[in-house]
Length: 451
Image (tube, rainbow, N blue to C red; front, side):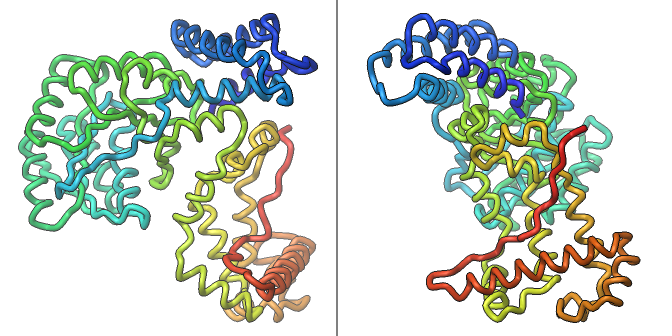
């Protein structure tokens, strides 16, 4: 995500290295590179020029200020502030109000990821941070697999779905779903509507009628970020008709140059509320302009990383693990549970990229997510008694585990030794005053350079 833009902006800041202060000449050179980087990221030239004009004016205004700050660092700060402003300033979030059930209407073109997002949003709303009871509503009566797809997603995340397969009137289905939600205690109704291959009068008329009938608290426009400026133009056309409340950017993990994320708020005047990556139901993030700007500039996003961890780690489980660590009883079953929680947080390289300074360091590094699979294979090849009592692992047991997992004996020895060291370290730390929340797997996947 934004790798190319991050690299180009970094090159623009390099122009200022070796200079003792900002001057009109080096500012102009740096700003020129920033504008090229934005245009290459598929940001409209008018927006890119206005952005860099603001950067230039602020940089010139800082020419005789903060002499202790290096010119490159000062330019990064100016660009960061302007990126945050360009993307909306503050996080908008969902505004569901006090009405129950709140209605969220989902709109967008076919193929933009509306149905998948509807499932992700339901999963997000039922999480321990939101604690809502959502109801998914299948109002796409045209695409043959739409209802089936939403049904599968609902089952996958444990959320109920309202559908009328024989009814071809989406307005009627939506209204019936709201009645059902009121009588069955649902907090939020998520209405997945039909998409089209292009903006057309029929589609706009239908979504307008649905919106008028259900009076949603939130209308969200879902757009494929990989389409760049086309996404911005489509967002503008939709907004002129249905006046939606916010934008959802999907497929940010694809070959996207970032133009949509940087341009939509400026062009449409509506905030980006969520960003989505991948197909997994837990890959949905609330959009924070400041955090996104930090990622673009290679500063990481440690706040989002901590939030992801808090969402996955159950409080009671944390306490249970802490008690076992203090008694030096942390075993392979506990370690397996830690691995599963980390895997649920998302792609390992993406997670590590949220750590400040790691984004650039990992650019050409291939982090092998299958390393967890190798560890799991080793643990699954143990007997229940061996998993609960690591001290039972003698040579003959290790040889059997090596055969069962398809690994070399040397790997088994190294893994067991590393586990034992981690176990002793955690036990030692647990005895220190004020120690707490020591849940941290000590054996991360190995990294290797791309060939």
